[in-house]
Image (cartoon, rainbow, N blue to C red; front, side, top):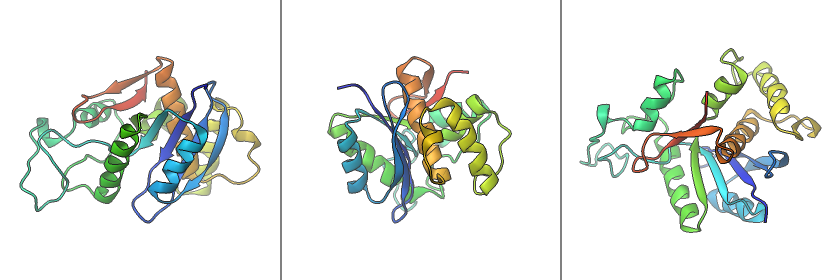
Length: 210
């Protein structure tokens, strides 16, 4: 069966996540929004994807067993931050560091749990960062993503790299478009046009090669 790439713009528990499926050539197969993990897993199984690209921290800094501030585990990695996140920041792309002070703790915990479930099923799971991919491929100057201008800007540019997006008759959300960017990043990685930064123990982040 030809490879398909499943991109997920992940959300905190109780919120919907954007998803996108691309075929082996990078053309759009499906795009939409999904609710809980069971629905996401069902979508992945339905499309037959073997590679899942998730916009969410999927690992912890060395030394941490969890993100619970009351737990005694302590990060032993340099600066207490994942090597992958330091590498992305060094490229000039801001992001939330995965520490016990993170404001996206619930999302990170959900993402790590989903990664483990998917990997146990034999899937390849990549952590991606659509903001970095957009900056590298589309340019750093972009309208605020929560505005109609930001959504229109992103759709116009995603249309140039993913065949089929232009034919979607409805307005796509920013989450769905970021999911498309996530799936596209996975395809670039498969083609050798993206690199995984960091180390396996903490979880790598895949970004396009500049």
